[in-house]
Length: 459
Image 1 (cartoon, rainbow, N blue to C red):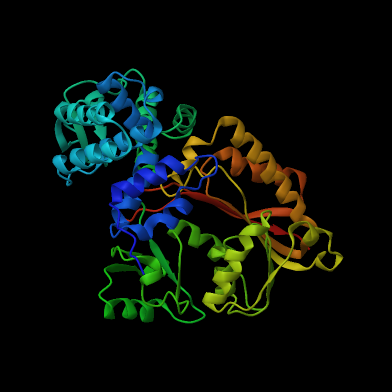
Image 2: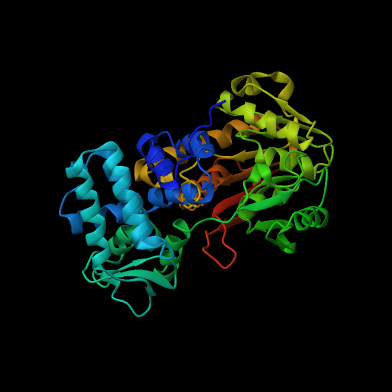
């Protein structure tokens, strides 16, 4: 059998960036198909998502230093330039010569001498314009320094960013590759320092958290398994969760095939805990795929009772069933979305409904980085209307005294507090028992943002 030649992480990243579409949000799926062609999995992943998160800022640097708008650069060459620029700006530990040389070699593989010389020249000029690849952010000129973290930045000898004293929203939008309308919205609700922290959180390299499957194990025993295999991690006792420091692929971790754990961020893991489903309850999970919260429901219910899971996209439910099988969850029943609401046997049937609603993803922009290139003020408004409609459809399914757990991974008030306020004004037999907005955080224990509300029906 002929072995497939291994590719470098930069080659894989360039292939993904040339194939993915922000609208389809398929970068992860494409990367998953190609990742086995490289031994540099971690680097390839960082390059792909690092470029997508920072693309607007990267393109600003390329355009200003090359004096050529990105729209005039062929896509494949542009992506090679973006990868090289990303590494020069955001990976100061990587030697400049390695970045520039491989970019030139990649260009030579797909283009002629002239285009190769162009790529080489642009990256060399960017490198020459950098005075420090990792400089203290507090001491630098904000217009000349691309932020890398709350403490460090890449310092240039020329102005690349708007003046934050004159246009703070424009500065944050350009520096963090975020839509201007979104930054302005945050600034109307939060102070400047909080908004800046949100921008850093949106562009961080997100940690991976492991939630033990309590049907099969517990935090202490799973931690012991990881220690035996020399997995680098830390245990967050208050959250009953593990934060990985090891860079081993998830599927290669001890206990994955046995279904001992699920990957889930801290903020997302709190939602089902707030609902606090009890053993033998009947629960409907209306936006269930891929099943992370569905299986968490089952774990907290001691795998007793019944969970009826559905999703508007039925094709995604295969992944839910796969996760249930791996984790040993046996109480989940799949229902076709429309038939769930038409089935008379489900009227006044459920003790609780989990509605993890489709949203703009503004609380998880670091993890779902393509979302920043898709959302708009109109799309947020349209989503809020959809979320309100979904909440209304839940009511006939509920028993007296039942609960609705409404959650999003958005931090936009229009999708969260305003949706709940509107629902309560129209449905006076419900009351708000609990409400929490969590803002994303970049450290020291980073996490995503999101919203959760617990609504209780009267007798």
